[in-house]
Length: 256
Image 1 (cartoon, one colour):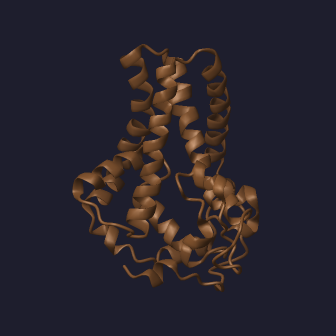
Image 2 (cartoon, rainbow, N blue to C red):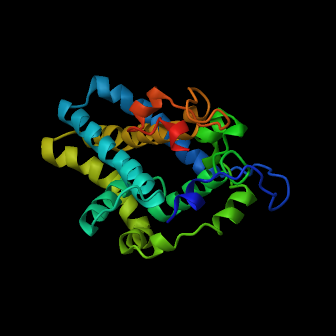
């Protein structure tokens, strides 16, 4: 894949349909409400009940699931920054399945659309709609018609030829809950006797929610607050705090 179709931003996009009226996806609203309430409860358990081993394990799972997004879906599959053999791709697919941010194929398609049509109606998390929308609001409403229209035109043949990506895509409904919720919950219970309730809310719910926010900050804060040393005419910025929280993804002005 050449850099041009992936990274060249198109500023003007002809609307694909009528005006964008937000259609709330209530299933997602309820799911995120539970996750955030559960994450707050998990933080309470961190200070009142959790074993030290569980907290260290949470850091480990947060790291490898984050790498499934950063090193996997983003750098390897979306941008082709490096080559990986089958064993590494399988490992990254496992890590990516542990992050539950949609399967690799969908994540890459949305990200390529984001790069090609940054901050237009075709951008899934258009930062012109404000912090909340670009952070997580875009996941609470149905996609703009331009996102769907332009997404269908994105070249995904490279991923369609990768059996690891297609295996994960086909079996994601099974892989995701096992990797994201079952394994992180059961390991502390069986290996060092953590309470099941505590393990669920800390190692699964809280950990997953915090990693989500780390990724979301790249779409929101890294498009709003920071410096633009490389291109002053685009919204992405260099944000050191996002760089730390999102495993090095805060150098967004350079990235775009």
